Image (cartoon, rainbow, N blue to C red; front, side, top):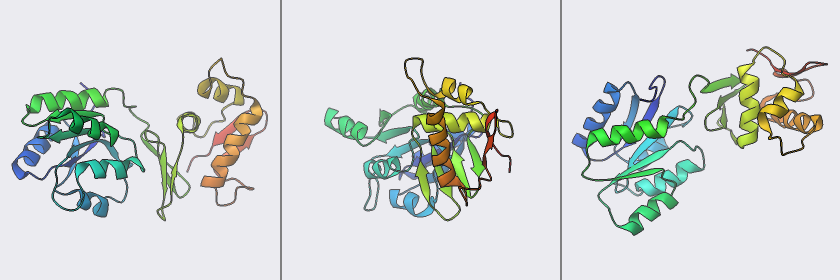
Length: 231
């Protein structure tokens, strides 16, 4: 079973009894559940998706937005896995769901036990421990690679940038040598240099630092590497 500690699931389902049943079963497994009846409610009330580990969306929802459009809009801000629940069983419907960004698809009616197994499967490889970190005015979600500032600015990092940031966070308060960063974020088949690492640090400073020329967070430790300073 996946570790449900600090795991938040976003549930969007308009059938009250089904929504309640799913929520209670997920909570019994130790998950935290945020549930909505309508897709537009999610976009109006969820200011950030950094805390969400997984989404469970019905496709046919009341209002102007259905579950597919909700998934498309969220995909521009976060990449947590999404399981669709729907009465639609045609192949074209399933293909449309996956094209919208779905990771899994469960046709109604279904057994709650099967849904729980699918949830566990999607969360099985989720990193445990380092979920989010504060750097300056930003809250960095290490799973999705999205940083959100206190003023609502959003920055999305690619996989290599996430690897470098995660390594620095894991060693926060201690310098990390350039060679260790290279070993962690690049394969042996690639040929990056110390200057390559420097360029990434310059980018991080431009994002996170109030004054990139006088960094408070991404500190150069001469002869030792780079250190992400503690708050």
